[in-house]
Amino acid sequence: MKNLLLIFMYACFSACSVNRAPADFFNSGESNDLLKQVKATKLLNTYDEEACNVYIIEPGRNCPKAKIKKTVDRADKIEGDGSFSLKYNFSGKPEDGEKESVLLEEVWADYRPDLSFCPLGISIWIKGEKGNMDQLRIHLIQDETLVALRDERVHFVYTNDFILNCGDWQRLVIPYFSFKFLKGNSKDSLNLSRFVGYRIEIVNQSGEAHSGEVKIDALEQLTSYELQAGTPQFNSLFIQLTSGYENEDWDRDFKACKDVDIDTWIIQYTQGFGNQNDVSWYLNTKVPWNKIQYPIVNNMVEAAERQRFKLVFGLFGGDYNGDKNIQATYDVLFEKNKLVIDEIYEMFGSCSCFAGWYITEEFHDGSFPDGCWQNNPARDLLADYLQKVAAYCKSKTKKYPVHIAPALFRGKPADLCGEWFKAILKKTPDIDVLYLQDIGGRCLVDVDVVLPNYFTQVKKACDETGVEFGVDIESFKNCWCPDVPYRPKDWEELQDQLFVAGLFTTKITNFSWATFRPGAGAFDEYKKYLKGKW
Image 1: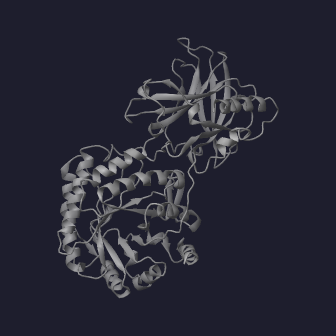
Image 2: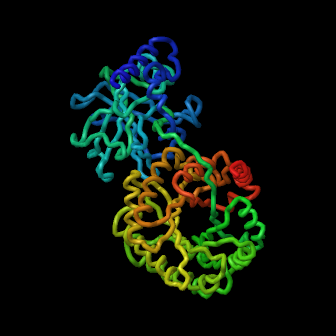
Image 3: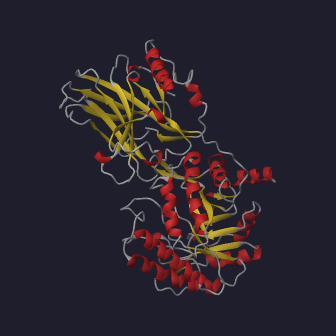
């Protein structure tokens, strides 16, 4: 394997001795042995947007006179909408005898990658300048605690003395074994699941004053994972109620769903939602906060009875907008949910379509804002609240199953994410089904690298606590950075999410009816897919 690294470096040196280096020249000779193992990949950074990620861009330690500036180059790129151009100046006057350097550093938080999944290495595209003799260093930054200060983190580094002398785009392929310990606790060995970020550093090897420009694009995680797709299918759908559904033809809608073997809808909430907490979506409510009522749930129940369709009833559509570390935040929600549970059960509990309860207030494993539920007391307060609501649902004569649908924000590495979910589920014996929101509609997920890794760990937590694991697939696309306006996904976008979910469960739902129905989104193509399966 050491020979492989030498071949990489020699190829770069040789290729850059000609006027134009062949693109992707690393993919020749023995390097193909590595690249041939690559199956699924994840773009760790596209370098398309100025402000979608948080970077530290600065001179290195003890070289305050060095300068670096980052811009997005929309014209000169390998993929996507652009590349990063790093323009820098070295003064030739380092302090304390250290070589001058400049750096770009990114530390991951929520929606992090986990490099331990079927690991091979990383790759990045680099474009230097002919005659540039500066050294490129790529650091992987490790933090076993996940809370260490910046200077306390462990660095493993790969160095290349030649590639910045290449005046054309080159793909640098780096096996993980090529990263060597640089600084930090020397007892720490390479732990791919505890990497929290990376640093791209340019080092002044000559010691002379000069300027340069380096462009970077398409930082990728390379894995050996290959998706073995089956023929899974949806068996339920979420619906998010609005006043626009007041005159909806529910018989027609339920028939359309039964035509594709979907026989259950999960009503996200029956009372309020967000800023509309004074709205009831069923008639004759007596809850004290109500100001307006719609007959939507009543009409849905009548149609479901006629069509032999099933409904899971969501509760109060509140949120955790108070201090998550105090009991009072959860007590307010619990008291409201008790009233809603009583009314829903009294009105609809004896209906044949009643298939369960859904605790509407969603939570996630992420850290934003203020740590959320990652640590105690917030985590245990959340678990106690969920159990109280679930137990109250089960206190009724008919013991319907209770569902939750937390979001996968990937606030920790996959193994710790699984432990976090397990800690909650151990305290919630009356929760029956967990639908994990895949967050596949928000430009934050690589389906065939991220999801199998995290699904494995969360399903393990469910299996060990007696909870049925399901997946809630997002059938919409809506991203804030880059800006992608809300729209339904087509089948080509949606099918990989379905295939991955099917590796872990048959309990697969979809958010939501608004973006997955006849004439909208992937519904019609999905129907064709099922016909091929049948």
